[in-house]
Length: 488
Image: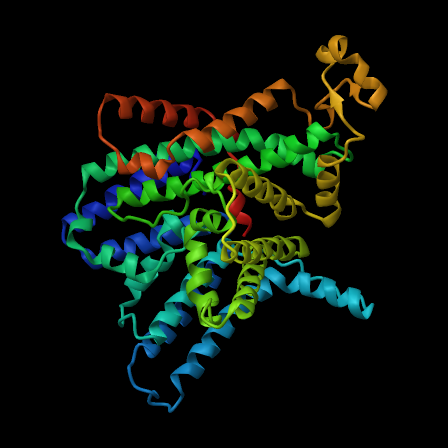
């Protein structure tokens, strides 16, 4: 079930909302918890009910282990060291994730190395497995550190399955979620939260169905369909994906935050105008913030962070971002994307330590273009697809201009520049340039949705803005598409 679907907006959401608060109104707290868990599991099972046992087993296992680790004694009654229990539980979680997400990738590479043709398993990737696995690993580590308490199973199940953030995050932390569900104020309908929730949900819906899905047409055509690209088409392809990914994923996050507010739950911010960043370090403080937080708290810092000299710091950065790349997908393009970002952070750290600074506009230009180029490897299904786009972006031998320029610029033909179908290979037209211009204006000069919600006031302007955004989004629901991060 998609957030951007009729059945979710007009059936599932209102039914879940009213029954949940009705049960709370009747002081049936445990029943309301149970209903929200069942509703979230129904929401999860809508895509494929065969995924359901996986998340149930995962929750039961991690809940049991987590409660065991919260005991402050060095050893439990079975005389197992707590650290051994933690390591075992993390390995089990990673094996579950690895089996479904990476087994075919592993087999493919084994076949290449040993020249033996093992059959691929062609396993279906369980929805959201990367998100709920990382979320529960963080819970286990915090339990080992004695930063949790022995929650009842329903409270833990809500933490893991709460439907607004279940499928694609934000990756939430137990200490920022569980107390909210226990707060008595969260069990009463709050009309201020409802108005803010609908406001931010409408922005996210508009981002997804109007902006992201428009850019997806040219990104898909350039990466997946076109066999060759000219220079303009290549840049249009890469920039289209750069904008599509941001508006798609931040749109999902806005919708998740808005939905959670309907239930009086505040999810953490996941985006803060990342394409305004003037360095790669600032970018990762603004992009997918909850993933960055997880990688920092549970990988980078445990490896030693920046406490053991520059060489160790650089190694820790590279390791952390290669893990981040692998988390996103089973392919060498994801590994290389993570490597590129790790390398960029190492370079930035070394550059900063020397005290060098760039003009702000130049720092932004370099940062944005690096991010745009790195996204090519993130998006490409195969290495050759990435090279096709990247090579065309920097090849001066394949420039094609629109025929409207031919009269005044015909002398450029002597330099190999052609006049004709400037966007023929990606099925685009002049509107692609207009949309790219709009994309730059939105990311650079407009307040982001979190800034808008911080300054939110229910008045006729916000009502009109919400109504237009929601109505236009709903009108396009017949063309609804999956969110990109459902693949991860």
